[in-house]
Image (tube, rainbow, N blue to C red; front, top):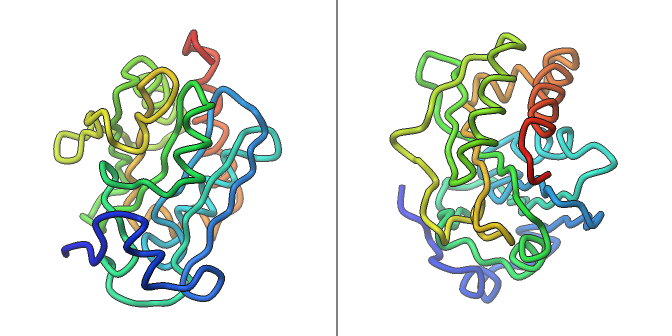
Length: 194
């Protein structure tokens, strides 16, 4: 489904902050930032999962639609996502982990993408070790330099595309969410620039 807005300025000119959409930023000055640019009603539960990964020690950002509607009403595709506070946070972060949602396809496979290949692969291995299925994302690889996950100091980041069934399971089952978050965070020491 096509996006209604091609850039954030157009969305902001037509929607009300605090009524139609919200922005949450917790800049903790960390080298890794955890983001959910399509949170709230856009790709449900992505912001909750991103916030759980960030815990209380990593920088966190979420753009959230507060009103239900078509997917494209508040969705700005990743290589055009330019909300200023997200870009500002990313400009001070070495890398980013960006949580996205995707449709149910009969599996709970996490699609891995982004230009930070070493970190992407470390996260994939750690998630597999924790019992989650992963695959490199051929459909939405997240390698465009303008992709929100790659707008960091290093020019690299990771995007995780979670099907709705997995997102719903994670927010419903605290032990699964904890295992998922720990698996993502356990990959950080394997990545030399964190």
